[in-house]
Amino acid sequence: MKSSLCTLLDIEFPLIAFSHCRDIVVEVSKAGGFGVLGAARYTVEALEIELSWIDEHIEGKPYGVDLIAPTSMAVTEQNDSLDDIRKMVPQEHKEFAKSILERHEIDSTDVYEDYDRSSFLTHGKAGNIIDVALSHPISMIANALGVPPPYMLELAKKKGVPTAALIGTKEHALKQVQAGVDIIVASGTEAGGHCGDVPTMVLIPEVCEAVKGSGIPVLAAGGIVTGRQMAACMAMGAAGVWTGSVWLTSAESDMPPTLKEKMLKASSAETIRSRSRTGKHSRQLRSTWTDAWDAFDAPKPLPMPLQSQVTEAPLSRVTKLAEIGHSGADQLLTSWVGQGVGLMNSVQSAKGIVYEFMQDYLEACEKLSSSLND
Image 1 (cartoon, rainbow, N blue to C red):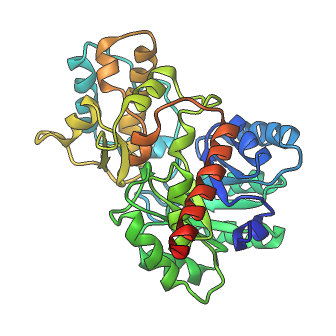
Image 2 (image 1 turned 120 degrees about the horizontal axis):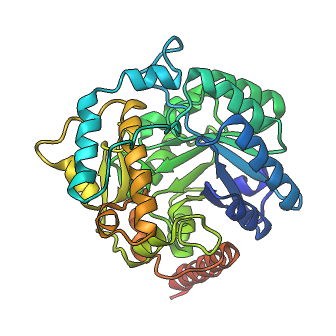
Image 3 (image 1 turned 180 degrees about the vertical axis):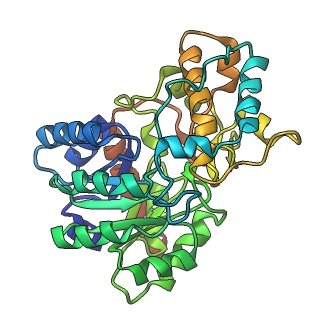
């Protein structure tokens, strides 16, 4: 395809696949797209292992890494250790989360003990993760929330690696241009995970018009799970698409089977945009867990990254129990996913999804072309 993005990333088809699963990253890149590993949840040591595995299996094809280093957080360089963050979390919020579990017959006694995961890069953690990512032959590094840290931008430029940033408004796109990013990912409210409130159909042409003349390609994101949606976005000015949710139900996905099955059955109306999971608005499957946090007696969500210290440990227990058939856990079960989930109705290989995108895109383009002849 003739696309500025294809030239920049040296790929055949401008389909970007964000995934926490290394197998998906490899299979998408080998099929002609561009896999991006979601790396924020990894430690330095774990990320080194994952990227080394990708390097060994991707057959020299290009791939990228995505981080979550938010511009604004409720921590500073002086208080950003995990212990510091935990001390800032009000007990009231933990007690409320535990009460949700208990109402669904789940023991919450030790739910917060020994849980030390965090999906967000604080000041002290970001530099080391960025160093590891850029020590590998990646072809793009992306930041999922806000302007990338100056350290990322500077080191990526030195290494000759394009930087990307996800945005949800025209104003945020202009800030990214000013900061010096190489690729803008315009994500509509239909997207899974963190998202704004502007629909993809409105956001893409608005952002493309705003950055016109900058030479910076715009990737469309938000509810995109088919090639015909991709064609529509390209018609509005996008240079390609950034996708995430569609890979969650792929054969290679490491998504727990119960969650995968829940997504395959879900309609586009069965997602909710809420601050209750991370402190910033994110879209996820609606469940009794999300309903509880929307209730009148629920405490107000804490700012990022504090809210995650309230929610991730209980949800980890919910997922484990749902896998062994616990009915209460199954009712609570949720995960980040976009509104495109209503079009995700079967399990396919990652390679098969790429090829289906290509075929669907081609048919949509041919249909548009024939309409001109008519």
